[in-house]
Image (cartoon, rainbow, N blue to C red):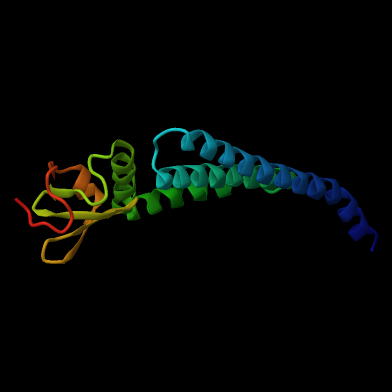
Length: 172
């Protein structure tokens, strides 16, 4: 019983310190995320880019906070960090196509080579742009077919944008 009380008294300040650090990290990550949203909203950056960027920053800060808390409590985080690095490498190779679509989607949303309802030809496909997301671009052909083009195939291709074609008209 005395040993249990001794362990509690030894770890109680560390646990309380860890909780305080976790709460501060949570608050700071939320405030920093809102700050980034506010600044990027004033620019002409697309809403999806703002959302993903601010959430990525928020979760990154939370991850750093959790690592600091684990270290403060007394847990050896060295093996955890090594495993995290190795796991990150494996996951990175597994999702490289998704990350490529995401990065190209950010470039499309930032530079806006075309807008929604524009008639475009991208590589071998053409149609009206109905949606631009962070991972793909949706086209609707003149015969009402829907084509999803991964953004890595959009940004890496020659894009032809027809200015004089309105939605509902046939292509030139």
